[in-house]
Image (tube, rainbow, N blue to C red):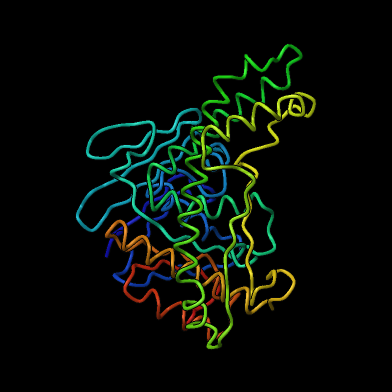
Length: 331
C-alpha cells in the first residue's frame, strides 16, 4: 500500500468524504455526477501539486469559502492542501509551502476516458499528454517547460504592442532558445525510448503482428544558436501576427499504424490498445528511472474497454496500488 486514506472537505460537491484505500485495488462506486472523479482529482493534487482539470476557485464547494484535502501515506506521512479562496498552501512534515515540494511528489498514472481518443485529439492535447509523462520521468523537464512557457507568454505580450522591436525581444528570445532546444532534445530522446517498446507492448495486448510507431513532429531545433536565429528571422512575421509562430509550443505527435497514419488506418479497438500500451510503458519507465511503482488512477475507463482489454489492464497493474472509479461493480 502507498496511500492509506484521503479526506476531502468542501471539495467539489463533497462537504466531507473519507476514502480508506486497500492494499491493491480500491473501487469507488457511484452514479454519474456523484463526484467520483473529484476524489481522484484530490489525490492528484496531493501527489502532483495541481489539479488535472480545473483552477482552485472552481474546486471549492458552492456556498463555502475554502477547501481542504488530506492524504496519509502508509508510512504515516501526512500531506495537506488548503485553499482559502485566494491562496493555496501545502503542509508536509510540519512545513507550509505555496507549492508541493518535489520530495513530496509521487508518480501517478492517470487514465481518463478522454485519453482513449488521444489519436484524434488536437496537437495541444497530445503535447500536454506527453509533457505529463516526461515531467514525471524528469523533474528538470517540468522546470524547463514552465520557464519556456513563461518566456513565451512575455514574448507574445510584447509582440502585441506597437513599439515592439527585435532588441526588446532579445532576452526572451534567449530564454526560448535555451529552454526550447532543451525540451526538443528531451522530447526526441523520450519518444525514442517509448518507440523501443511500443510495438512489442501493443502486440502483447492486441495479440497480432501489427507495428506501431510514435512520431515526434517539430520544426524546432536542439541547437540553441539555430533556435535563436530562427526566432530572430521570424520577427517581421511574428510582429504582424502578434504571437510566436516558431518553437516547441507548436510541436505535435503522430501515431503510425503499419507505417500509415493511425487516424486514417487504425480501428477504434486498435487505437485503444495503443493507448493501453502507452500507459504500461509509462509505468515501466517510471519504475526503471525513479525506482517507484506509480499509483494508478483509473477514472471510469472500464466501461470504455472490452473484456480482453480490461483483463490486460488488471494484469499489467496487479502489482501497483490501483484506485478505480466506476458506475458499477467491475467483477
